[in-house]
Length: 321
Ligand SMILES: Nc1ncnc2c1ncn2[C@@H]1O[C@H](COP(=O)(O)OP(=O)(O)OP(=O)(O)O)[C@@H](O)[C@H]1O
Image (tube, rainbow, N blue to C red):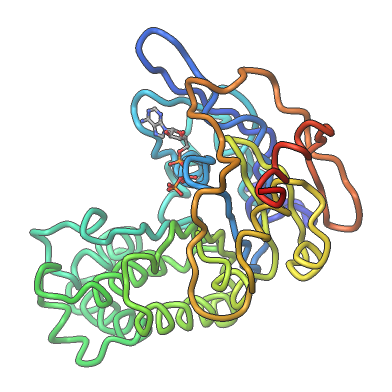
């Protein structure tokens, strides 16, 4: 596999995805750009409908059937995953890159024992025997903090609590020791104590496994606590990003980012969800179908999308209210 020393583990460049609705096509993602290094946790934020989940799904090759990638590149260690009709993507999905979904009940197979589904793919790829596969499953369950792993490996998903199911999904995502883990609001459905435990687990994955995480969340206190870097999306576009989270929070450059941060009075403190801003984006079918100008560098590891005075007025109207 071709590998360049400078290539980020995951790099998304100018990614465009269009959605077919009725007999028309709309831009669901427009020139999305971001990268994730190994050992980095990059937060991906933006109000509901801004395209966060679609970005993750595009990377995994798991877009809904009426959506398709129409432009751009998704590189894993410098290689374009979209190039050869998705063959490379297929081989990397679940091994080099894996995904943790918000709702484990949807992602887990209800009729397969927990232990078996955690190691299913890995055991097959590594040619593990039954006993070795069982040992690996128990090891992974232990790693995600499940006590009595031999017992739980034999259970079915419905026999587990929500927090345990989320741990099982994480165990399954890390079974192949991926370099990149895509996380789509993995703690949103869980209560606060379990959320904290799962977040601790993600921290350990980052530090111990050196995994790079792309972490979608509505919760800016999670970003503040956990992420190293941040990308902000609005209406299907990446509008601002910084490799250094603190630099972005100290001086957000895009008026949307300013509005987003202003909607959260204190970034540290009790868990908060980003509620829709009054300036929320129009639905896909009512958006202007223009081409997004690429973000421009405004400092080391920092980029912002060009914006107009009109944008500034639009996004600051909450402050005026
Ligand atoms: N199958 C689909 N067909 C048509 N439009 C879709 C489809 N899936 C998603 N979209 C649209 O694409 C846009 C981006 O959706 P996406 O789920 O990525 O948003 P999101 O930022 O993850 O939102 P949330 O935070 O609510 O999960 C939305 O406007 C959504 O309505």
